[in-house]
Image 1 (cartoon, rainbow, N blue to C red):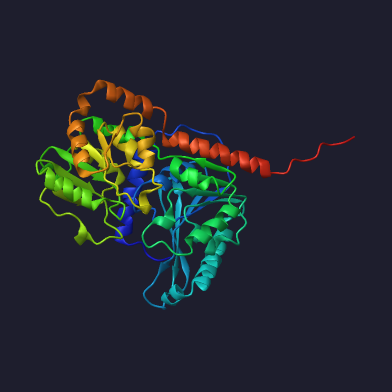
Image 2 (image 1 turned 90 degrees about the vertical axis):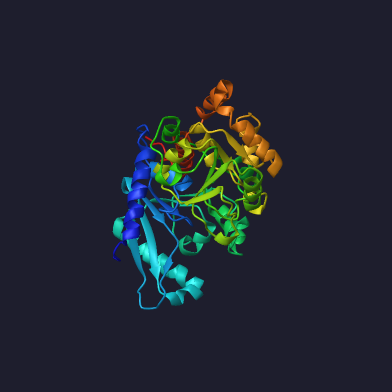
Length: 412
């Protein structure tokens, strides 16, 4: 096996710490599922989000294999092989390593990955298994396996994202035909996908209340945020084409008295295009377990999303996370934020810089509103990742049970 790099070791430690914070409050559940094999486009150690929340829970009760996209080497000296990285709860991250020449031959690359994974599954005794997909593009290397159950957890409209493969929509149609169950990352996405699958179910972004609730208590100030003046207006998440950088720049110009704190890795966009006013602070990506300490030091949290194809179907996990931290929230009119958070008057909605600025002004005093705090907590009490996971599990067990042939009654 290839040696693990220092960066991977650091990521492993971060992911393990995040898992401790995330899964420590899960109540014991008695159930049986076959091995679970997940095919994902997201690196396990990148950002702690929906896949990690759900699959770390599955891993507490059975074997979970998380198959990432193949890693192509810069030369042709490497032989195809599998890298196995163990993470929290025994979950195994699988990465097939391929020579550079296969990058230009997708069919051969997919077949090679299928063969490498098949050998590993045989060695591990993985003969009864559930397939769980986050990307339809993984069908190329997986379509010839024979899972007992196939689940498509459609967390985003991937075809609308920047640099999406042109064949993604066709692969998704194929996955819909194969899938026994389809879960969606929000209600807006459900409304689009339920027309394509008979057994689709909405599971919007949920919350680990205990983890983010730490921000409601005094916490040590992170060193890179300690020197930033108040009021602080924050955002955390991946900084990509979904962030409304024009809105951020307009707000920074109009309100030099506010400090805008942006946390998250910059991907798929040129960092040079980001607003660079003196009151905009980019602190980079942070580990999941660090986020409450940053949130504790913010006065207002924001969802600075642009109005474009990539945001039409999103259901931001950070909405309930901000609220669980006790932060007032201002958002652009993302449908899955408007419904229910805006309609319940838990989050303020604004679609232009002037209105957004006014909403932040109001939010700066909202923590003193006892009614808002109580209504927010009443709503958050109705959702959790534990509940989401349990509801998904119940559906999976039901569909698996329906597939098991019932033995005929004995006759005398």
